[in-house]
Structures are given as structure tokens and as C-alpha cells.
Length: 150
Image 1 (tube, rainbow, N blue to C red):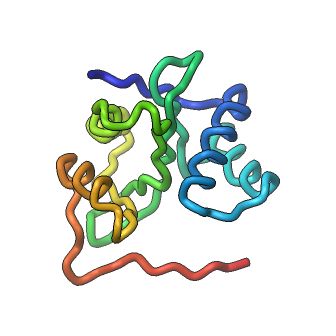
Image 2: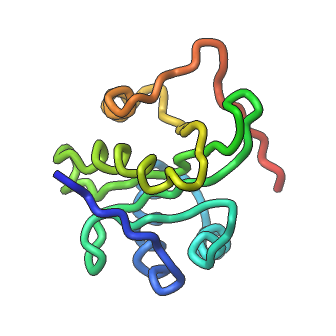
């Protein structure tokens, strides 16, 4: 299987917003519509901090992936975080996730990304297996910690 990645732009807001709302509902992420829109619109308008890709057919996407960018001295420069990845439940288990995780480094190769990172639920063994097959590894000594600023 080969899943197409389509860089999302301003005209894709409505479809991306629906997909993100579905993912957030599934993951019990509480977020109001205005906050979600404020987070998505800059990515669709060319923000240097990240990109959003729609997955599958351009007219009827089956999911999305959002990648944000940062800098890591440890990894030698520009790094990327797969902030969110979502595939419609009816499509899961068909290799789409693997395709996306293989295609992303290729799509961003010219950007000089030195490392990709992602966060996974400690209890989601299915997702962990997918990420392990794609070459991601848990870090032995480190875990992601967060502090909300608002």
C-alpha cells in the first residue's frame, strides 16, 4: 500500500478540523472549537513551526498527520515531532500508518530533519508496535514532560 501525503493548506481547514475533532474525541482531549482553529490555521497558512498533511485521496482524506519543528543540540539540529496522527477507525489495520511513517521522512528530507520524535500512550500497545516497526524507540532515561502555559 502507498498512502499519499497531501500538504494541507487554508482551503483544507474544514476537513482537517473535522478529523482533528474526531481524534480529540477518541483520545478524550478536551479542546473548544476556537482553540483548535487557532492551533490549526497557522499550520495551514505556512507557519515555519509545523505542517499538516492529509492522508489518502485528496478529495476524501482518511486521516491526517501534524508535524511540528524544533531544535535539538543532542540530535544535531532541526528535529520534528509527530504531534498528532489519526486514521479513520474503519481504515486502520491496512498499513496506512506504516506508509505514513515511511513517507514522512522522505517528504521532509530536504528540510534537514535530524530526528523524528513522537508521543504514545503508555497503554497503547498497538500504536507502540506500529512505531517500533517504523524505527522509533523508547528512550531509556528520558520521558516527555509538559507544563501548560495558559
